[in-house]
Length: 337
Image 1: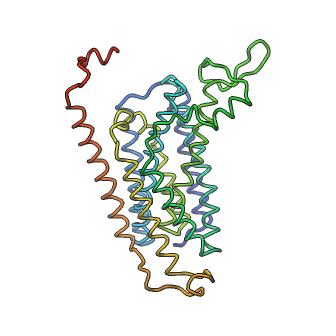
Image 2: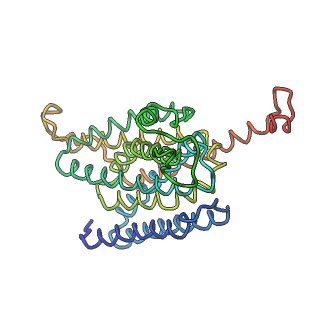
């Protein structure tokens, strides 16, 4: 795939322009987005991402187009998993809803910057060290195992990292509009708003460890990796408000993502064996018997896994919601208890 420096500059400039527009048009004035506003912008960004994939397919060939769509779907699914953790953080810090947009916006920008750094590092490693595929594959298999048994019940707001931050920063317990710091009695304190942003930034760093090796298992094109990540993060803020209630119903999302990460991990290990250059494995000779999984199968597998996880989750939660209460309390009693 031939991507000139000019195309890179234009792509990055347009991406920055979108986020600048988002800030001044939607985030600068604190408010809670309506369902209609969130739905319109979510549809816009998803449609834009799909059109971009079609453009890649028409200009560079459908092999690259397929790699983009597989990468975009994977990154979007992982981003939705991010939203679940963001929801826990927002609840843990009791962020007022009118200020949640600002926190999300800053968190998403931090995520894009961190992923950009990881993308550049990953591209350099892949270009110069073929053994990195073994490392990425093993990492994804480990992350798949961890993802399969994660329950998102622990609150990052009370985790070790945030305990360390609170120990070293003077913290005010009250929000002061959307300000990050406040002066009291001549002393400057950080507000819970800043703590929330720090927590989300740290979570972004952890999730980047999942997402970048995963998409490099689907394509070795840094441009596709960057644009798939950028489009997956665009519209994430609106999606948060659109499907906030639905997030709690996606009970099998973690398991679905675990299956996807494990699949990509196996794909990476097979590719590493196929192009092997590691001296102590098969005397440094490639193992041509290892199959290369085609991108069309990867795209089909990822799409099917996301669909099955979503449908199974909705069926499970609908069945649970239809069960009669077992505590003897009425729904109204439970609502007001």
